Length: 257
Image 1 (cartoon, rainbow, N blue to C red):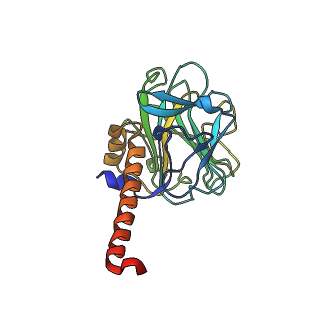
Image 2: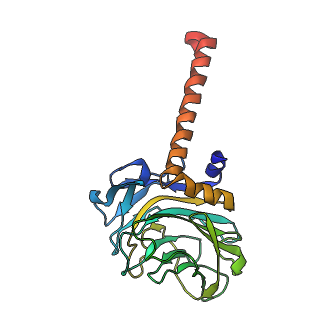
Image 3: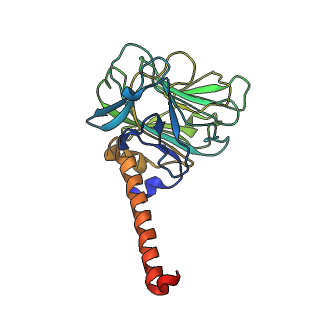
């Protein structure tokens, strides 16, 4: 079951695996490494959930390049861990992803609402709101896992095409609004409008598919560093298989191989 969680990964940025300077490594193997921007080495924080990045509620973010991670009409999931350090000021769960048109941004406000502001095939854009999810006030000091599922892609207008999982529990889109973001940026922690995220972030991943309810629950049960551990184990298995293959070829071919 855990191996399925690695299928369809477009990118995986895992602070839980430890500090890597001003670069946040893409552990998916695709090489889309992130750059810590407006942040210093002190942004790396250790916690009971493992290593994480601490955003300053102003302009900290991780630039994850210009690649188009989301595409109109193509299902996708964004998964991440956050730990709110204090309530009462700013936004949480803030990031922005390029869709090739107007971008999708996600933010959580102090009112406890979660918004996915996305590009739709209408001139004004639109947003989805998940008002039943746990409030910020009830999340201070707690690591929570989130998975935003877009069954019909980021341009879908129907509420039924959007689901938010919080700690393995699903919440439906209950309202729609309007919004607009011009295209072209991929950022974890800030969408370049208003303040940045006011929380600690851990493993952040983008899937080019819908994850199931069971997978969302499993990601939560694995904990903040669970995805990073799975990716590390996969890399180790790959190295082991390569080494074993090389050894077999040497045994068969001798010095000529």
